[in-house]
Length: 164
Image (cartoon, rainbow, N blue to C red):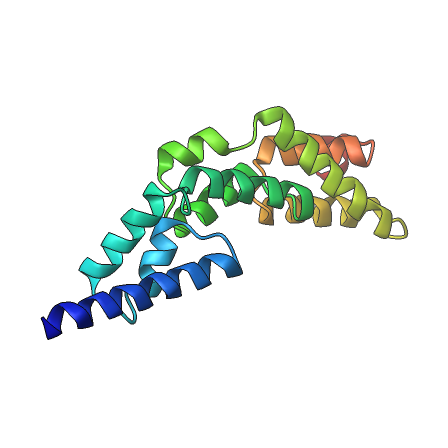
């Protein structure tokens, strides 16, 4: 009797902790599970995470969609880097494939980012502007083809002729 009361108290504490973590920010099932397993038994954590999925408090697909939308709005990022970040948060590859940006959207994001940065580079010589913009786009996970097209369009130049 005493043991079941303790287990029940532990599960209630675990649920409270899970709800507290989810009110701070959305989390994937993997993130929540990893965080809670530091304090509680794996079996109890798995049960609570399963319960939270059932009642809709954890939804990896919705999390991934919100994450991509947030990144598009506030820190444009290419699909390559988005895929790495979402995998790191424990999102399944099939969900990642569904929520990633289309090639056109990716191009528009890269163009918006490059145009914003090009304004601050007006005084620099063309080769330095091209190098910096291309590096920025590559660091943000945009494919080489898109980065090349965006830099050419943003600086109104031909990357192959002017850079080599």
